[in-house]
Image (tube, rainbow, N blue to C red):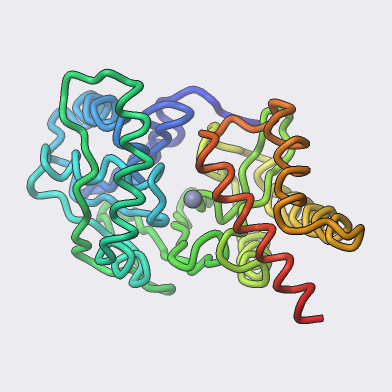
Length: 295
Ligand SMILES: [Zn+2]
C-alpha cells in the first residue's frame, strides 16, 4: 500500500510537508526530522513542526539522507528559525556543504523555484554546517526506546545514507531506493555510481521492512514495502540494459540522453523539475557508458 497523505504513520513516525516537500518527524524523548525538502517548503515544514511538537524548538535534529537541493533545501531556513537545531549528515555530505560550487548549485536549483513561488519570506539556501557526521553503523538514540540506525547507501550520490528504525521496521532511504514515477514504475537514480547503487539496494532488500519512506510521493507499507527494493533492483538492471542497447545501436551520449528524455520525461511519467531530471539522466547515462568502456 502507498500512504500518500501526511500525518501519523506510527506513534513514533509522522509524515510532514507534502508529497514533494516530503519529510519525516521521528519522535522519542528527543525529536528528529529526516530531510528538509526544497527551500520553498520551509514555511510549511515549520508550521507542521509547530502543529506536531507544540513548539518547533522541541526539534533537536535534522538528519539528511544526502546533500541534494530537494532534501537539504530548507535546512538553513529551519536552522534560522530553530537556533538549537543540530544537523546530522554523512561525512561526504559534510564535505559537499564545504564546497562553494556545490553550495551554489543547491542554492540556484532552489532559487529557480523560489522565483516561481512568490513567497513573502526569505527562504534562501545559505549553506549548512554539519554538527554530527553520521557513519554506517552509528545509532542515534532519541530516548523512549526510539533508535535510528545509520546505513551507508551510496550510489545515488556519494554522500547518501539511509535511516532505519528497527522498532518500526521503517527505512528512510530517499533516492537510494529509486523513485516511483506517475505510473508506479520505479525510476532508478544511480547518479554517482551504478555498482554502489546496486550494492546498496541489495543490502536494503535484505532489511526487514514494514515501511519504506520514499524521497517523494509517500510511504510504501506492507507487502509492497517488503518487495520494494527487489523491484527497484529489477528496474535498475532493465534501465541499464535500455541504455546499453542505445549505445550498442551506435547512439552517442547526447542522443542517448535525448531518446531517454523523450521516453521518460516528455511522456509525462516523471514529475520532477526539468533541470534536475536532465542532470540526473546525464549522470546515469555517463555511468552506464563508463561500465561499457571498461568491458
Ligand atoms: Zn537526490
